[in-house]
Each structure stands twice: as structure tokens, then as C-alpha cells.
Image (cartoon, rainbow, N blue to C red; front, side):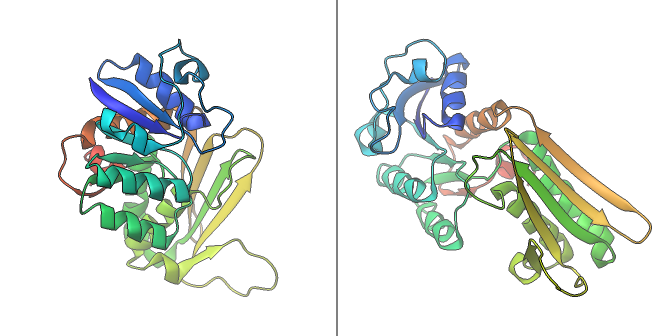
Length: 267
């Protein structure tokens, strides 16, 4: 059994990860962490996740349980993730990161720790989305700048960051297919008298409402036709199962920064 610690255990994703670990024959939950001051501190992680009691009380300090685990799964916030990566690196434990909203500097800091421990970093851990990443790059490369690329994503009303990490990664793959850097061609929303659309421009639009788990559509609009690639998630279990798959995969890897493309053998 792979001894697993979950950070963000009381969140929507964290609860599903803990519940699925309880059903998994290869993984064992040995630690559950939440932010200091959370009302879930001290609660049984099994009961909180909707499973049976497992005797794992939710704590607020990864360093106190890190020695008990073999791998860490983190779905928290950018600042909390950086703190958890430091603890994992100090204790030579691999970590799987599904946190979104990380900025460039935070990702660069994570890369430094990847020289010490193996890290899987992905904004979306579903198999379907990771196949979509590859398709978007291939299509962008084949169609070129004659087709305008627009990305539309929608999530539930409670999501804090926009655009979604998945939308940004889709945009990165599209830009790569065009031979461009995303920062040079991205447009996030449009308003006012903005003028004609520029060649190779990649538009990213965010919608928020209701309880949408996650919808992403990449549009390739040409003169006379339009190709749309869409992924719709109906359950968070899609992402949770991907995180568990990543945890099993990373346990024996050498230090480095990996993605779900690596985990799924798509890279």
C-alpha cells in the first residue's frame, strides 16, 4: 500500500480524493491537511469525505505527518501549495499538484524543488482533457494562422481563479502549435472598440455560473467552416482518479517536473 497524504482534504476535490483512496487497493490515507483555522480541523477525514471513519484526523501542518507518507497530493491554493512543496522537498517525498491559479513566479519556484523531488504538476488530471491538449496542438499546427483560435471555459460560481488552469494550458498548446509564445498572442476577454482581430491571436473567455464542474471548448474558426473541440466534465471523480493515478506513477520516479502527459504516456 502506498501511504498517501492529501492536502486540501476538506475541499470539494480533496474529499473525493480521500473517498476514492478509501476504495483503492493500492493506496492508503495516512494524513489529511487543511488550512489553519479551518472548521474541519480535528474531524475524521473518512467521515468528512462521505466514507466510513478511518481514524485520520484532519490537521493543519504537513510537516507533522510528512514522515508517515510516501507521496503527497495537493489541491489547495497557490500559497499553500508552495509551502507544501517545500515540506515535501525537505523530506524527499514526491508530490502531485492539482492546484490552479499559480503564477509564473510560483511555477518557477516549484521547478526549483523539482531538482530535489519528483513533482507532477497539472491543471487538469483527466484523461480526456490531456488527450484534448495533444489534439489542440496538432490541429493548431496543421491549420495554422488561417484559422482563428478561441477558447471558452465555464465553471461553477464558486471558482476563484479565471481563466481556468485548463484553459490556459489549452491556450499554451495552441500557441505552441502555431510556433508562438502564449504571452505574445493571448487576449483575455474583449470590450470596447478593439479593432480587427490580429493574426495568430488566441482568445480566452471565462464563464461562471451554477454548479458546472468544468466545460472547455477550443474553436478553430476559418472562412467558411469552424472546427470545435469540446470536453465536458460531469464529475470531479474524473480529476480525482487522475490524481491517484499520478500518485502511483510518481512514487518511483527520479527528481523532475512532470505533467499528466507524462503520467498517461502522451508526451
